[in-house]
Image (tube, rainbow, N blue to C red):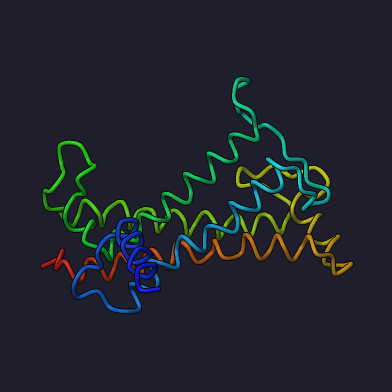
Length: 203
């Protein structure tokens, strides 16, 4: 049993890195929560688009501006993996690989990470994510996309209102998958603040 726990602990540290000293417990928990906040929406997209699970009504999932050579099903998987990878970067703000570049980073391996090189993109990301997902929620409830155009059939609003009116399971699955994304930006902002304070970036 101890051997299994040791292996799990070793794998965990390889994936997440060694926790940095002086990180508040709340910041560590927030950082590890971010990938979990993003995961449900990725799984929802893959289930809906790639595997064709009927999770919506009145919603036309089109190709948009995708090139002809890229199947929508593959694009959705790639998009979900990228989103999860970006979310996982928050863990670096509470780990040693947020202070010293990992060995797999070309030309920078082993060198100290300048605090602002982590803080600036993380802070910008927090602002963009907070704005994007807040506006997405507001506009979706109005049946519109971020660019202002109206979704055919009411879009997410039509789907949600139809399902909620019937207490349908699709509405609850969608809300459970996507509503946590509202927390991505604020959580990232909080973890970035803790990182900036710990690294004494503004002194």
